[in-house]
Image (tube, rainbow, N blue to C red; front, top):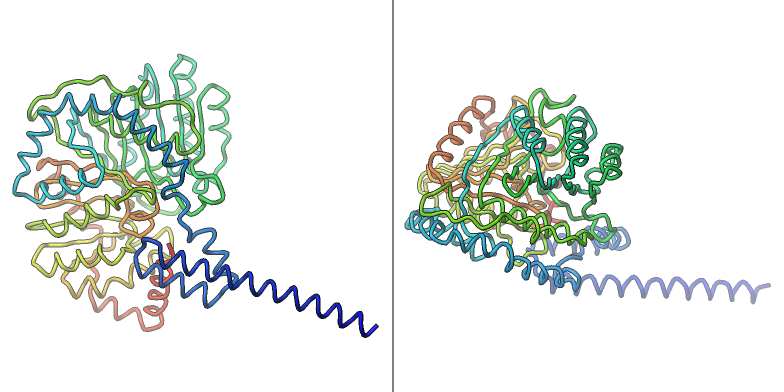
Length: 492
């Protein structure tokens, strides 16, 4: 009996020893990967801290949300090459037909902040400035969604819809009715939504649309992709009109829902050749999420030549964890460092990386009027608390910080001088600038910039200016909590 017990103990000891060795090997592997990964050093150090302090939980967390699954994967590389070939056939003719317009737009920017912004965006993979025949900017869902419903109701060829969130409520019921009617008329409908972001919403309407002939697909449903989000929002109708901005597909984006008195957001509608880059992004996202149908070549607008100054110059920029550059973040930094008079920023969340906050503080310290406005009525507590940990650094540099108190602020905008406005889907936080699929448009138009600056001033009327006294009044324990949340924001 004693010998059997000793044998069992030895086997158990051997098993624990093997597990210890495997754990050490896994930890060593993670340390090597982190040390050689092209990431922000603070992110690397944060992950090293977690996996060494809590080895088992840290390894599990790193497996799900720490690894970079998408960069340079063979499948992604094949798809991107395919898209390059598609772009040569479909997008290039559109840009070529508008060469005179683009050259004139770039020449008009010479010597301004816009010139440096345009150059940064183009060099890092963005589209060249293309003409928008019309631009309509919406600051209320009550204005945007009726226009979208009308455009979809008039569709003759196709409707492409992509949203982070697709709810099931009064608005989606109207959208479903319009899409079902258009499907019955032979119009093609493609819908993309973010799987994890929509996991709590019913899918009855989407299933009805699929049965009626729509093609509906979730983005990033596979387990290794669980930390990535398709944060883009866009609707494209017949290659003639595109909508994009901050609003998802849900009634709360109109009336604030049960949580908020007001939902303050910014969206836009454009027509003209500028639709083409958005269509390429939709086609790329479609292929990257398992689609087989070519949604670019057969759906691209026919090349239509625009001469000098025939339209509003708009540059479409895209970035994600899989792009070579953090293009949108880099354009934000360029805007901060080249603005001559003012740069006014809106984002519901604020968890920046070091280069971005350094650029904000440097711009303010140099005398530029830097203002940052975020929501003062949060929908998510953790990023709200983390943002407050950055306030002292901003305030000491001279940045004016506002919290929007009239409701929930969801707009993602940047207004530079009286020259340009950047509007899109990208928040000023690490998830948006590093991990999410994001798209923005840069409107090189002083009229649009001036009108949006006026909107910003109206938003200030519903906001509270944050002072250093306000920060100190939070108390040491609250400030410590905020700093802890800021620390864990680096685990991305």
